[in-house]
Length: 102
Image (tube, rainbow, N blue to C red):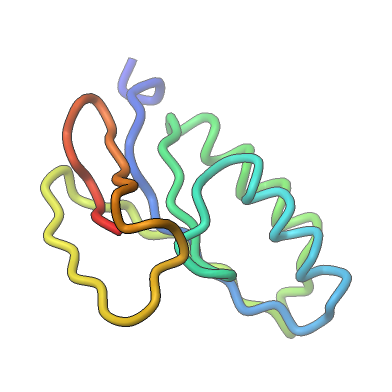
């Protein structure tokens, strides 16, 4: 049952080749919310996360590319500085809890 419980993750990447970069970005754009061009937040079950990472693993070249996935805590204190990627009045909620502020 715990594998089906959704959690929030932060996924970031540094992809060397433009074609792999675009494919990775498109996959993540379907799964989550872009915070910056190469940083996404996703809310997924463990099973769906494993499928997402497996799909990305098929695209990347591990000798040149770097993809990282961090599980975020339930209560998160987030500060942002500078230009935001979405309007200031947009907030991300998960299970009724404000998780990240823009």
